[in-house]
Image (cartoon, rainbow, N blue to C red; front, top):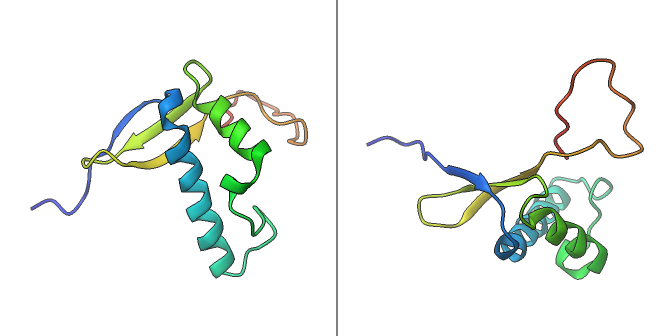
Length: 99
């Protein structure tokens, strides 16, 4: 039996937003448990309306969001392709910015 799971990669839809927010909540818990409370804070993102709004926007069709879907249908990962944030130094060559 193959121990590796082959996820399906697909563009996000608005229906994915709640599950993607939950991934960020899980990441905050993990980061905090490993001593990192500065990078993403210590509050679940689901309790921060601005974060929920941003993720919901990223998940809307056509806004650069992608998810990996596990064989059981759960979302296992998320990324957004888009323009670099203003605080990110300008690239000196071609780039694909993953937010």
